[in-house]
Image (cartoon, rainbow, N blue to C red; front, side, top):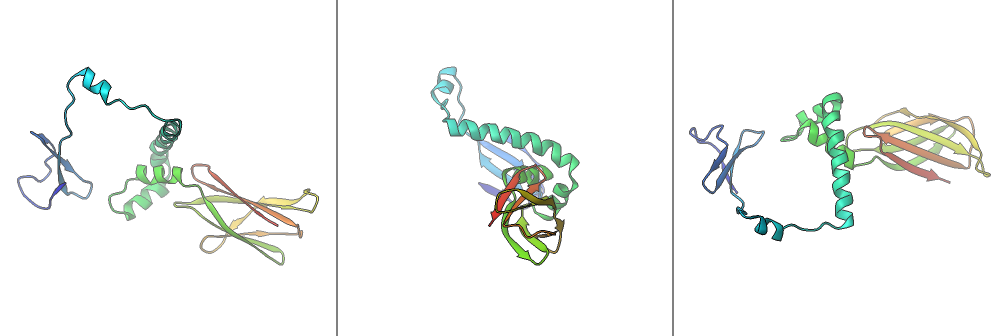
Length: 182
């Protein structure tokens, strides 16, 4: 791949000339690559058609879902545009697509007197955290939404001392991360 850093005659130039393809990157740089080989006959095209495995088909299906989400979310969620403006050569669509493939992660849960703290992160944004307290028999003692604190921490004021704490965290695409303490 050849990079054309500056040449007045090639500024803004894109397309194909012979066996060379000229592309404009979002940062204004012109990139020159060799064109892929041409397949002219149907017989040649059939020869190169590959059969996909079940996992490849599943990944293709997931990518189509992610792409559909990213097209819509890039226009409606301003956080994606904000992150794209900070990161070079990224678009809101790219950030939204990446967010769809990365679920939130619950790193740890801490119990303090009357307070449960949950550390949760996501590559873009954690939208909500739910905490459920259970007794030793598995009966729900208390359940509610945690409130965002400093950094990646969320806090839940607890009135009961349950033996088990179940936390769930959501991101913008709706993925859920679970964590059970106790």
